[in-house]
Amino acid sequence: MATKEYSFYPGCSSQEGASSSNYLKSVNTMCEVLDIKLNTIPDWNCCSASIGYCGGGELPRLALSARNIALSEQHNAGQDIVATCAACWLATKETQERLEMDGDLMAETNQALSEAGLTLKNENKIRHMVEVLIEDLGYDELGKHVTKPLEGIKIAGYVGCQTNRPFGIEGESFENPKYLDKFIETMGAEPVEKYDKKVSCCGGALAFSEPEKSQALIKDIIEAAYDGGADMIVTPCPVCQMNVEVYQDKINAKYGTKFSIPVTYYSTLMSVAYGKSGKEAGLDGQIIPAKKLEDIAGK
Amino acid sequence: MSDTNTSMVEKYRNNFLKEVEANVEEGEWVKMCMQCGVCSGSCPLGPHWDHPPQELFMMIRAGKRDEVLESTSMWMCTSCYNCIVRCPRELPITHIMHGLAHYATRLGIEPKNQPTRKFAQLFWDNLARNGRVNELKLGISLYFMNGIVEGIKTALGMAGIGMGMVKTKRMNPMEILGGHTVKDKKGFQAMIKKAQELEAARVDN
Ligand code: SF4
Ligand code: SF4
Image (tube, rainbow over all chains, first blue to last red; front, side):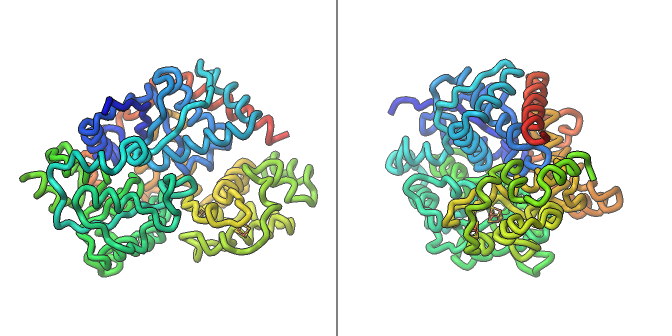
């Protein structure tokens, strides 16, 4: 297959020294194996996730994503925009839709953009990395590169909210999307059947502002993974990853549970299954070490 | 009461639905609600909402202006989009919740001490200044948002998590000195300012 090129929107949490920098690490490793070239949008800005609405009204928020799309059109002309973060993908895609539907908003957005010397045509597709993997490569291709199958690991595929709703992945249901389980299988591991918290909410950004209420949601997500016999949890979303991994001690202290379950990204699994080192897979970014993956990576 | 709030009360008198339709993001959808209640059963933090979405929509039609705009309810929205994919009338409920929260803030009558309100404002300020979010600064302002004593307590409580993040290079203490920004700060800030002006011209008149 020829090299595939995309315009890449990495997002704030992937920056060096930020909470999902290990996600980016494993994505880069995975893409190298799959011959995917990611051209980062120069000088991209924050999308305001789903929490910018207090200070930012509709137009300022749309302008944020519009700037990223316009920069992409200018520097990575004709390329689909790909995001790895669910919130980045969602905010950018929502902006594209809203501006497509509303000519007045589009005109005002362009007026604001001109202050930064930019114009928006709004023609390129906005996609999540998992769409690229499924639609442009396909499970067969993803499986071909496996050199170290992840045998003997049982994994709960936690899809969460924003990679799943409102847009979701073509051909998948909102209630029970199967693609993450298929990734797990393709990498030689065993998915937890009927993981009933697969598409439940982890609290999102409210894990910061409403920690106790959110931790109650997170507890159920982890419990259901253990109930399904999982050794670890895997997710496509940096917010899900962080929320489900880092509060386990707090939850244990409050509820008397003994949680200690690693939570990684699909790209972590793939990097390890593709024979890369723990470091290349971003495993050194785990707060709860993914022992079973480390063992395989170290072989 | 802010001037904008007073003039909005004047302008719309007894028609809060009209006010919402004209000024709240996606507000024109509210009248489409058929009160089936599906959305209200969908919110992950539902038990903590004083008025779930369906009820807020009913209250808007009933003209309960202060009760709606001063409510903490919509600030409990986690943006999970459960409601949107389930609503038989396809109302963009998530966006209406954000829109109501923003409109209340614009009028200066939002619940000031609601924790998500404070966090959301910090998040916006952080990003509007630099173009990118600096997680460490955001985190520190967040811990101290309830005052210095509470802040120290929260920070101590979260210290274990912070250390884990630092050790795995997922949080960088040096960020406090500068950290992440866009290069074209001037253009970025001018763009935001323009967008705010254009929006104000539409909403506040
Ligand atoms: S689900 Fe839709 S129609 Fe039903 S109450 Fe909620 S907003 Fe109204
Ligand atoms: S998006 Fe908000 S309003 Fe809709 S179900 Fe989730 S929390 Fe409730």
